Image 1 (spheres, rainbow, N blue to C red):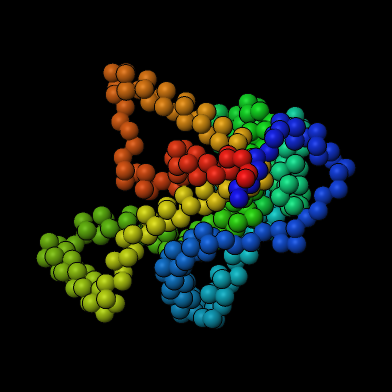
Image 2: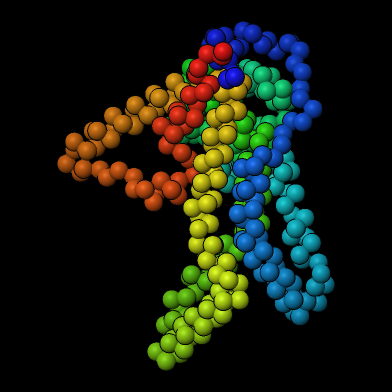
Length: 326
């Protein structure tokens, strides 16, 4: 039996006035399989980061006399900071380049958000609405409590479609997608920083080495890699698949967020919006192909590395929510 589509999504603000009593769910959010998989795929980066922090602890102990056991617990505990409201505010303003909604934008967003969260049984006041100054049609969930919407979406989407978009983003929060993604990136920062530093220093180091030293260093690296693969039965080779696996999990998260919005009754509206965007993209592709430039389509490898499924796939997965209940 499939969820029954909402018969009149454009009536959403009239049916939930600000004074309407709303029953909240006991569990406001959870961690679904997609969120757990995301954390699991970032485990190698986390372990590498932990190893770097431990190595830094030894150096700090030798140079400054800092207790060797202190940096690692502090680093592990620092993950809680990313969910602090003050830190989230700085994250939204300075990293994500978001702005607080203007009065007329908040007047358009607040009742729609209140309706969406009321349907989900979620306390919407726990989350912060932000505006991205962009002419693109987009919205996103970030950190533990951030919901960003582009100014174009607020100004141009019908109220029902804006509600469907917000319901999708709420699904990322209630499914644990947003906070697990941030936590995974946070704990991978030391490993990412070390990798970028190594990439920058490699050309300089190569220029400073003689030809013989370069050959010897390359041979030693290959031998060490061989010993590592032999000792671990080739398991490190699985790391080469991590970008594709991570992208696949991210795409699954988008489909789960679509399902969340559809289960709340926004399936037909979300499908209509996706079909509209798909038609516009196909029209743009036809124009590009007819032009002298002859734009090329997205290759299969690029699609496999994309964090979002294509619109046709999303529409296909929404089909069960568009059929009348039996």
